[in-house]
Image (tube, rainbow, N blue to C red; front, side):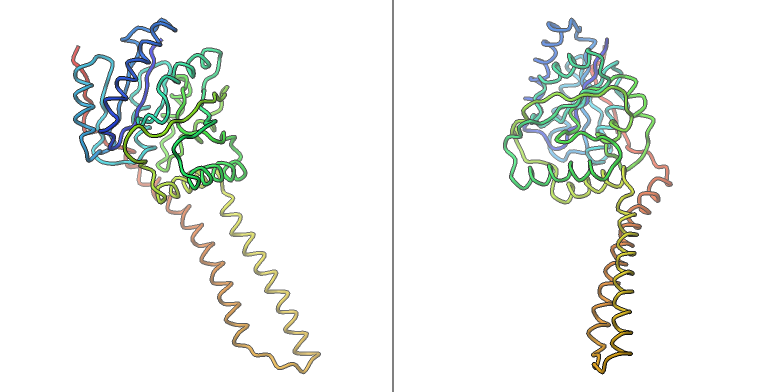
Length: 316
């Protein structure tokens, strides 16, 4: 049974060699524990337009060692698209995905595979401990996963990333899904089939800094929510109904004051408040609609998800 490991890489020159050495150890574990031969274990590095020496290091590894390949993208396409490119080209009966920053220990792949052999099509790694991450990152991640779980009708596991292992039939379905704004962990949950989690401890980065800035995290959150939920659109409708109801009550009050009291109404303040509230609600609703419409526009272009510059591997 052939096993593929997809490793997205972006500006990881300080980690690439160490990751390679750890993967060689994982190869040995698979040989001793599962009797998987070297030629049955492939590692696919996917270089996402790195601007440092990551490409040179991975190219050298891939051209010198059997079982390693480098998929070099034409430019930076983003983390989720980079993973997609690797999965699309993976040949294994079982495909694992792991980031190349060594926060997720490569040795855990063997434990995921052992669980997979029990009959699960997907085994996702659940973070029971996250070292070296700020309180803000931990809090926002926890909040995002729980909001997403409430908003969607897909059972997306909390406290998980893209670190997981999948059967070939899951991979085949995943490669047929061509949407551009990808939230892979959600897409895999949507596919179904038997899935389970396995707890592990996530380590601090071996070198360098995280590539997920706050702006990228926000975009990722939007992609996750809008890909699997129409709740924001319904929320805009509910907000409109609520505002209209409040406006109706205020209208009744104005009519009552006009007909049954001698109170002088200073109209300018009321008008300004009403205009500001209604204007804010309308802009929020338009923004939500625009977010979904923009995604529909992107899908209708039918451009390729990614462009591969070349694939480098050792000639046999």
